[in-house]
Amino acid sequence: MTKSEFVRANPGVKAKALVALAAEQGITLTAGYVSQIRYNDTKRGKTTRKRLSKSEEKRIAVLGKSPDISGGVSAQALTDLRALILRLGTEQALPVVQEFFYAKQLGT
Image (tube, rainbow, N blue to C red; front, side, top):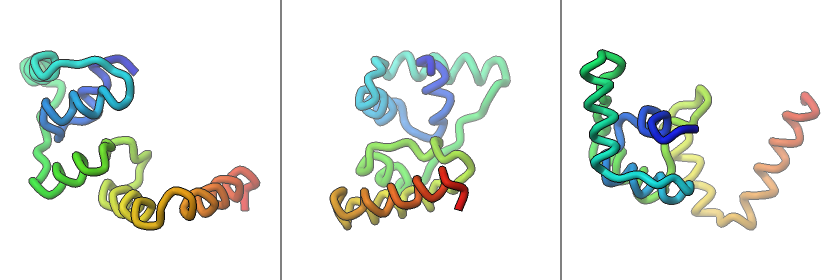
C-alpha cells in the first residue's frame, strides 16, 4: 500500500491521528502530506472526506486501528471486537480467533 492509498483508505481520520496510525504501521507521513493528498483529491473530484463523530475518532485513537480495513464488516462491529479482545486480553482471545480462522480454512 502506498502512502497516498493509506491516506485515501482513512478518509474520516484527522491528519494528526492518521500520522500516528501510519507510524504504527511503519509508514512515514506528515500532516501536511495528508492534507495535500486530500486537497488534490477534492480538486480532482475523487473523494469527499467523510467526517467521523468525536466518539468514533476517540475509539480509533484509543484502539490505534483504522475502521476501513473491515473487508465488508461494519466499523462498529470491528470496534466492538477490538474492545472485547482488549477486555479479555490477548492470551484468552487468541485461541478463540485461531479457532474461527482454522474453521474458515477447513470450510466448516
